[in-house]
Amino acid sequence: MNRTSETATTLEPPVSGRKPNHARVHRAWFVAAVTFVTIIGAAAFRSVPGLFIDPLHEEFGWSRGTIGAAVSVNLALYGLTAPFAAALMDRYGIRKVVAVALTVIALGSGLTVWMTAAWQLMLCWGLLVGLGSGSMALAFAATVTNRWFTERRGLVSGILTAASASGQLIFLPVLSWIVDTHHWRPAAVTVALAALAVVPFVWLLLHDHPADIGQKPYGAKEFVPKPAPVPGAARRALTVLSSAVRTGPFWLLAGTFAICGASTNGLIQTHFVPASHDHGMPITTAASLLAVIGVFDVVGTVASGWFTDRFDSRRLLAVYYALRGVSLLFLPILLAPSVHPPMVFFIVFYGLDWVATVPPTLALCREHYGDDSPIVFGWVLASHQVGAALVAFLGGVARDTFGSYDVVWYASGALCAAAALMALVIRRRPVAPALPAA
Image 1 (cartoon, rainbow, N blue to C red):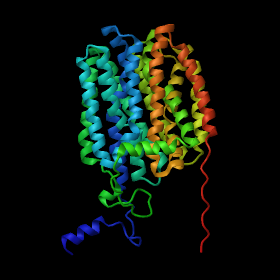
Image 2 (image 1 turned 90 degrees about the horizontal axis):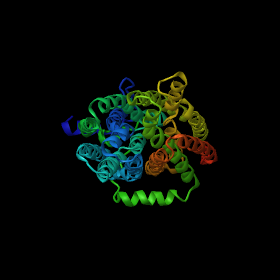
Image 3 (image 1 turned 30 degrees about the vertical axis):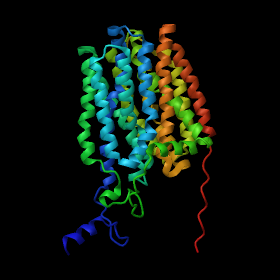
Image 4 (image 1 turned 90 degrees about the vertical axis):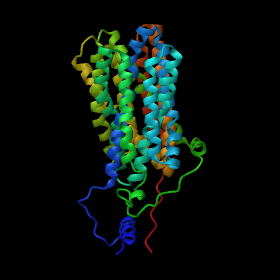
């Protein structure tokens, strides 16, 4: 056999009669591992906003509302960029989009060390980091999952979602120590370097599609050819949105996920550290508690992915939101100068529930919108970040106005109760009955 025929044989899909090699790990798991590491490296920027509020307020005299506004721009762009990034991945490939996004994150974070005015914070941390991070959002994980897996999608979605929490676990203690010991500028440089360090791994190891290496997606019965690049990424993202907004499930999923973002990224991640500091807790201690949330976030999200493969996603969402709302109502009486058992219980519980909502939300998007689900999920994620952005800003305003965060905790708890009811209203898509055998 000549070299040309050998190559052709290697790239052909496996013949159905050929005995599979069960000892070899499917390449999809390696791609998922690279994606996991990539999201961890990019998660450094998600750890910073809550750590920077007090240092920026002290150095520049900017109000917490002003700083919160920059964070809100970042959070909003993180969500609004996601559906366009998912469409760009269909056009140019995952690897190119993610590599550029990481570079933009590094640029925006690095430039903050020279800022002297609030508009520069808006530009660097709000605009540049927001755009870059939006391309690294959960729509990235959804695209990888949809292309490389037909089985274990709920589990893989949970694992990749947990990567962000793992990054928080790694970076929060380090960055809080840097801020406390060396001020905020070295922490910003650390974020930039962390993003750049992942770029070579993405470029060399992240394949766009199983067909690129002659394999089937994990669990697929047949070989799946790589689809042709889809032109007009922005037009496609808007077309998918135009179709989705005509359906009830989209608005319910977007509404519940907006409340999810408001009660996590916008509330706890942005304001927990300064709120704890208001009650006399050291910044490093509060940041360590957030890192503990990251530990249990990994467990909760992976478990949620496992549950999603087995139980009704709507009921899972209702339980997650209801329990989160109840926990927030108790937070104002738990904040204290030192760590005590009830606070530890809150941190553990909130960690388990933090992004446990992602696998069932993604599953419902996939159920209702099929091949367009990564882009639809991108728009649902946009609502998540708009909710986060509003609370990041309004939380700072409330602190400036009332002198405490209590009203924000109570309002967020009530919103979570509403999200639980909305999740139960989502209708399941009827499954077509199987045709009788001829």
